[in-house]
Amino acid sequence: MFQLIINRYKKKSFYWYKEVIESNGETLYD
Image (cartoon, rainbow, N blue to C red; front, side, top):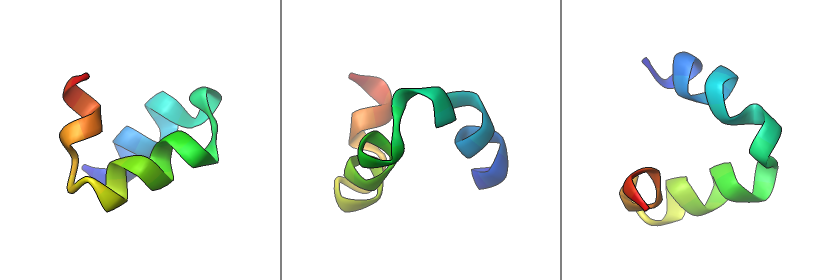
């Protein structure tokens, strides 16, 4: 599941993914 999210949004940048982690996934629904 997590790997799929990483692959899908890798283009957005590592910092975006870092924000998702720190916000417990809330950024995913922005």
